[in-house]
Image (cartoon, rainbow, N blue to C red; front, side, top):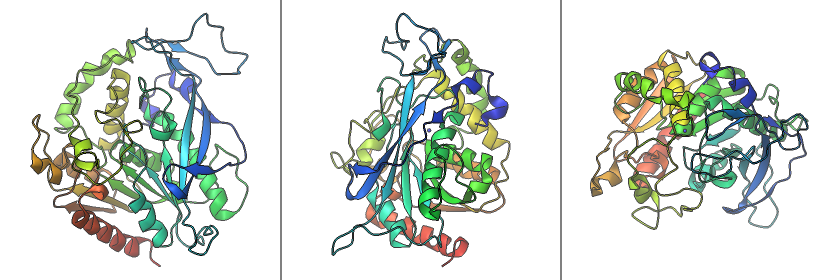
Length: 391
């Protein structure tokens, strides 16, 4: 859910993740025969221990210091020192057998990044893009969804720049498939810009990644992006000192309301339409930790300072938020996660070519809303794509 470079502490350089180069090996995905998944293996050069210190420990790295016991979280669970991310692609099968080849590279490939404590399962989104001639990919970030290795540390990063390597690795694979040229895993895929799309925290991650890698992103679509904290800049400034404990105890759990309202609105086990796997997307989300919250606030501060993104940007938002503590059926037609008013105002900080679409009755994930609302969302997105991508 920053370049972070200006905000990065010296230890951040130790946390950068590298990707082991290997030939892509796609395998069957949980979404069915039209989907394949590729595991991207990552190495973490440092992880926080329960006392807040970094432990440099890379599996198979003979230079790593010996440890008598593995690092532990504040709750005593071992801290993983290796990570993986998962790239998913949509390749619709032909009706008369065989796999449909990749669309011709006349349009940018699409890479979708999910929100915090989430994973990719919106098959309608994939079908929309491939149906319009785009190659579609989605990335389950490390410690999320298909890439989850620890529920206790699910979603934890101390710096959103920690996601850079896996997004670069995904881009390299996509560029190789689109261009047909050989690209080293974990490096930028040459001059092959993509259409980057992100939801919620994934929208914040995608925004900053596009800012730091403008030559690799031709268009940016943001679905309820978490560009600002609930309540706006004043609340963000007030909250910043409260998370300074992250320097001492990055894994400290913060006391925040644990509600399942969003899950109720999307899951077919409650009021929604979608088969959401509770093992991959827990109803109450992951624990909120001080180090992660500090990373979010730093990223949002960078956005607030102004990004001047050079690519066209589309932002999809609900017209209404309902953030109260008591469930109401009206929450089935509102964003129950983020303050859409603050988000709408913050879009002014993105760049000079930003389109904001507000949808009446939309959920936090606009394209998981009831069908009339999401049909409207897809229609608006199609109109924007015709105008800015063409063809």
